[in-house]
Each structure stands twice: as structure tokens, then as C-alpha cells.
Image (cartoon, rainbow, N blue to C red; front, side, top):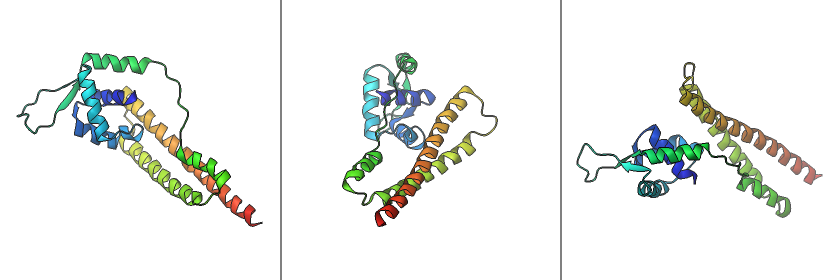
Length: 183
């Protein structure tokens, strides 16, 4: 049940319309919790029905005007309850790792090329995260919110660093497999 909590978090940071939330998910929250605009709009309706958020009064006529939402006290309380609750880590589910396992029994055709493609994608994501870190988390950004957001970004940097190292190692292993098969 994390999408509603991601939306409550985003709305507490800044009241927003569904379109603005979708854009924010694409730019920041989506790096670690993705959602389509349909999922966001559907969840906004549920959160409003549960009394966690409300549409904010508009300064202009509402016909064709996008609705902005703000969090009600019940929504803040729900987010605080969820944040404080203990949760067990979830085991990773990764299609690439499952495909490697399958390749061990059906053959490796196509896998090496996809490992290379994944490596490039992870290198790009790592570079993007490092750019964000340089731009947004320089000296003097010491508020609690800044520090926690930087901690989240560091998790992304560390994960991408792991994947680039692991994929590099996997490709070296594939080179060894090719050599061993040719012997």
C-alpha cells in the first residue's frame, strides 16, 4: 500500500494537481517508486474518498481548471502511522537475474547483449544521480529534509554503482564462458 503514501508525501511537500504529481513522479519520486498517471488519478480519488486529502479552493472558475489537492489532518496522521510502522525488507524480483538462471539450462543466446544494454542504462542512471547530487546537495544543505532526501539519493547512487560493477563482472564471466566453450 505504498502508492497512497508516496502521494501523501508529495502533497505534504507541495499541494499539487494530478498532472503536477505525475510530473513530480517522473522527475523525483519515480526514481524509487514509479506510478502511471492513471494510477495517480485513481489513487487521488480513493484518498479523497477516505478523507485523507481534499481539493483546494480555486481562485479562478473551476470549469476546465485542474484540481489541486492538499493533505487533511487524517492524511498526515495516516502517513505518520505508516512511516513509524515496522516493515520487513522485500526480496528482490529481477527479471534479468531470472533470465540468467534460465540461461543456465536453455543457453545464453541474447543474454550477453542485454547485459551490455543494462550496463549502459545503469551507467546513465548513475551519471544522472551524480549530477543531481552535485547540483542539489552541495555544502550548506543541512536541513533535516535535505539530509533525508540526500540519503535517498545516495541509496540510488549506491544501487547503480552496485549494478554497474556487477554487470561488468557478469560480462567478464561471459567472456570466460565463450573461451571455455571454444576449448
